[in-house]
Length: 618
Image (cartoon, rainbow, N blue to C red):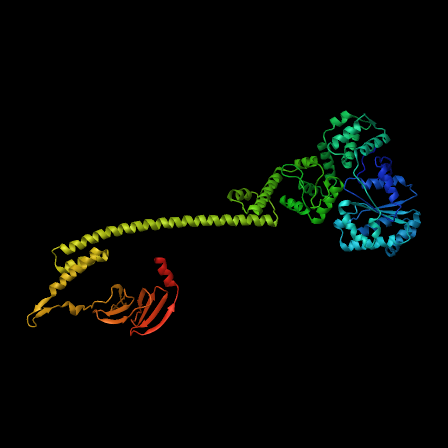
């Protein structure tokens, strides 16, 4: 026998029907169900052999004259695919005319097809879930109308919908128009071990392959060591490989020498990837289902897209969904769970795919995993990436593509780090300035102490020297200008008083003492202590504040010009205008009062600057 009796995954021939074994019970039940209604729903999880059961098992129950099966896959649009599949079967000359076919309705085409063959028509929609995965709402609505039209007609035509049970919810769209669609249905279970043994031994008997005793049990144990159910795809693949090695005899030693499931699935995987229209894209998608440790991981379609972008590859959503469905049908991927996550069917597949991930890709995946873990940690504990983390990521930043959430997380981490660096620089700069100011102040005070010492010494010399009064007074004033200390101030006043006393004399004519200094400066005593005093800009007036919160102005000879009596609060500052006409008096409470030189109160201003400044001082 040239063709392997175990090679029928996608297409089915008459020869395949002859070697279909192990599903007698399901086949009989399916055969009975098909006559109960014009519509039959066949469902089950992926990998249960639904398609094989119809195309081989059910087909075996019919003679060629009993049925006309037409197999339909959705393609780009299920309505167009249905029409093309029917047109392909039409054999009458009148119906072959292209212009006539365009004018015929679906119902008319099916009627012509029946009249051409006089066989009941069975429209078999395999992988019907594609309509709900890829189809639009208008596409589904048009299809439902077409199905209802045929079902309600007298045509001898039946519909078989083969669907993965994960998508059964989509059938509810049909129930309003076709309430009977859920009434006639059959669920196909996974094949158990006893049926799997029949599926091995039946084709082997048909193909005259000798089996060593215990071979079937040993092979099933190797493929499904921890399960009572058998993955049919892997069983077919393994048997096909064994057949190529030894066409006439299957022995236990052949199983041992053939390697483990990992090697089997590895070669199977390579074959399926090579047959894809876009092998590179297909492999990229499969890599997304493997962790950085080489194990399976569950992910959604959007996460697969992000993964591909990480490796610098952009896969369109339509292409992505199509390839995922292809891998599901090949039993490489499990269908999505309740959280819309897919995963590889076998750990061995993950190991083989991991071997195909390059070193550069592994590094990028590790970096992405690192960022994802850090982001998860940030969501729980609000901890951003630190300096070392960002330095590690920086090397790969231009090579890796992240989603928007991770990009914003990295940006926020960078901003925070820059803010910290800026703060540290500011503090370092401030510390340096403070150090300079401190050294400057130390130097300033040191110089002042040195100058004060020199000035005090000069003041003492001026008091006790034997020079004339004028020279001594000059020295004392110079010392005071250098350092205004109590010692230098005392020296100035002492020598000045001494000079005044020497000017006094007794006027024998008037019979009294004469004091010439009175004509120079006749300053009258104040009723309160002077706290502060200043000369006007033109040096013609002296003004100052007194301890009793009053302000007083004198002329240069000491004559009182104006006295502004008690203010409401302590005086902070007194300012005389350049033309000597206005006086501003700032108080501790934040009020500034304005007067003219005649003593008239003009107005007041309330502000916070003076008060704030004063409080900061005290």
